[in-house]
Length: 462
Ligand SMILES: [Fe+2]
Image (cartoon, rainbow, N blue to C red):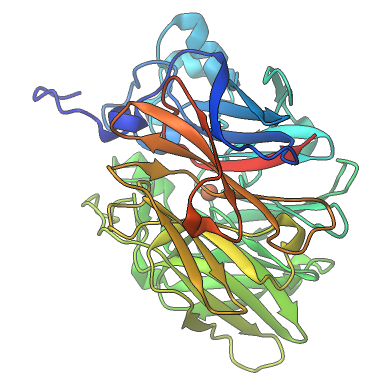
């Protein structure tokens, strides 16, 4: 903090960390359907100590997992820190030791510590609950107790926070960026974990330039790597400038390959400078690949290369088409929606397949990237959109779909989300009929305190 006692926005309001680990039975109003059994897991940054870096960025807080366990119409809540090597070392010393982005900002006590914050996504695959953050290995957590079990070593390096699970084969398809000897490099990896949890493939390739590659797209037979101009630069980081910055003159590149192909066969398609944190889904028909993505004109939350603040920008859903039979490497783009949004999701049984339904956190008031004040459902068959708008400054997390049964039609099920009640310093877990979002929640589980803003969530049935 500087002499003017400037409050870091990522340590204030509902960004501020919650430092207790609790177990609560939540008060339910309305109906939590008896068929909804399992848990909604959420994860986000929650710095264990006051950050060392006065310009602390939201992305660098220690991961905390929040579990909302649902059975027989009742909901209990449990939250636990992810005990990464960074968390353990700082816990031992009782203070923050790691800086923001550059290794030069770290306390000498961090030497030899592999770090990691495991704060971005929480994914269940092959019987393992994994807290993910793109700079490190997946980190295993106990499904029920949320005790930390440690890094999953078979990955032999960092893994995206956004792997895709193939609903037909059970494989987990993933990638990594910034791979190699030097940090902030253009090295990337393509990887596959089979349905039993065995890592069966990890192959390295070079991106057109070093960039933050947050997410990617996968279809039944293809994989797409979006390298968009939120660039990474060690040279910048070593000279006190931002390690990650917006550099639109580099253009946007998306590498396409067959899932069973060699990384040497990647074909790079192009479009104008833009940024995508999150695709909604991707699928293929014949020689064409389709990707519905939340597209920003300018990467939000990051500065320009000279360190000046970046422009404010909101995302909207667009469809990208890649014609594998065509001679052109241009990506065709068409708008799908006119509402600002983020955290787009589909019925997980339709990941990698043509989906009819999608849901996202929407921002009708244009309040900013994280404070989405509505939940939207888009039906590509009817072209209709439903919106449930929150009021009073309340904000929703990512909406997560759970089917009514394994054989229910696409979209027949529930949406769960966690909403910050701005006026009450508290949060609620809401349950909606997924195909009737506009009527509002059918059930609410009230938390006695708030859950800080976070990144992602997923439902696990058990
Ligand atoms: Fe993400």
